[in-house]
Amino acid sequence: SGYPIKVIHLITASEIKGSDTQKSEQWLMLGDSYLSIGLHKQANEAYSKLPSALKNSESMEMRYFQLYEQSKDYQAALTLINKNLLKKPHTQYKLLKIHFQTLNNQPLLALKNIESLSKKEKELPAIQGLMGRALLKNKQEIKALPLLQLTYDQGPSSINALTLFRAIYKVKGVSQAVAHLERHLAKFPGDEASRMIYASLLENKDEMIEQYKILAKSQVENFIVLNNLAWALYEQEKYLEAKTYADRAFKASPNHKSIINTLNKINDALKANK
Image (cartoon, rainbow, N blue to C red; front, side, top):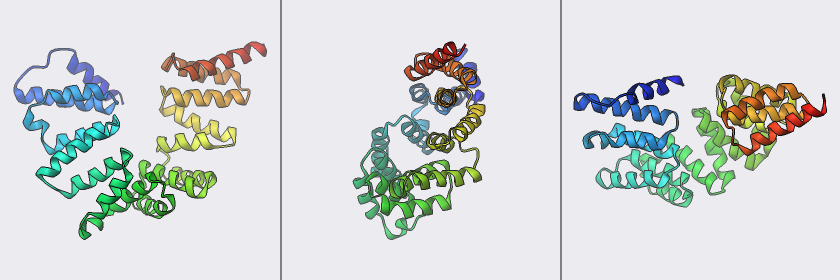
């Protein structure tokens, strides 16, 4: 995770210069580095410096779609997709349109566009996942569940695991949804996004603390993880250990009201138990 920051420091330390190709390579590396750490505005500014021929290339379009999805600018993604569909109505753009319509709270339009696909396009493996997500967004969870289960079975990624979790939660309740995440994490222990949700739903505080400690080892500056862990320890009256994590959370995000509240509660408990 430190590599993109090193690239940013190296490139921004001096003026970008050289041949047109060399400058383009530096702007591209800079934009990709910003994008990888979630600095979307800076990434967009770096990409804007690229020559038109490169900005309009397919590889750059994919970068822009990633940028728009991460920054939740779904309408910008749809505008770019519609522009491309006028020039080249490729299946890839049709599927991307369905994906971003679902994200943009337009599930009925997404489902309508799925229906308009050709028979061959409807047989693509990606369609069942797209339809499942659109149905889920449209609050048709019972119809969505088998499609999302099949999508997860074929590709047990983090996003597929969490989408299936939401469907199970709605249809079968929290206990079965938690059981699904437990099975997923047994196979894919490195899925931190799923572990975050799993930890937050555990009723057993000792188990919750164990899960948050696993996350805290890899996400050393994640103030949400650190604050949740500190609060769980506070509730178990492990005040000294709780303060260690609360202090780390406060250092990472000193103006966060929830963190300040957690730290104050722990400090008050420590004073009362002197």
